Length: 319
Image (cartoon, rainbow, N blue to C red; front, side):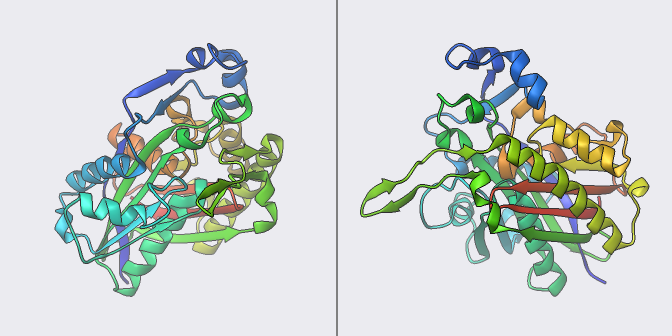
């Protein structure tokens, strides 16, 4: 059987780092209020001239270097983002051009915070079917561009960043099983309702979120999809070496780990350092776990994410 295996990873956070105390200077909030509710202490914000593709390229280059793979060897680019550079073309094709390669398939997937799950499952299908041999999978966001900085219920939560992995066809076990789901009936919980029409932006161009509703839905749904992936793959929670969850809220992460019976010592937690970076959060956490030496070759990882739509998914793999 042919598997898609992670050959290398990389990540990037913009230079500008903003603390909770920094936010408290212009928003009615405090470090205690934010940390107690979310676990977030810092977030990184893209510079005025930095676009999503710029963040994605750096993360991609680092992943390629880590994998020992030349950009020219890539035959598929799947980029997850809810904050593309422009309406079209896709940010993936912009990244492709900046990497100096052409000809391979390149496209975006839009599943907000579950985007990396959707992207990696898609790339896995390409590799397992023989349609690709080496894929670049990226999650990248510049959420600071769609935040109302006067709305303390949203602006304190999000940050910018990018993470990437290189997947390669392998006879060794890699991605074991993945599951993606969605329910558009919950779209009002989290959305940016604006659209471009007649040369104007129609509707609110900023993030709108029902915080309590999102929290309740996420806690229930992430635990359920994790259990389903394990059961369908024939694994048990005690076989997981590391849970690499979407980094949105420490309380949601703690709840998922508790539901699975996992010690927090088996959870990669980075939300305190960069906030919710949407599609970038899982690959950022994954790369941090790998580069810190905690995640080692041969270990079993469970990745999971949930985002607006609502969309959600989980991936079980052997690193």
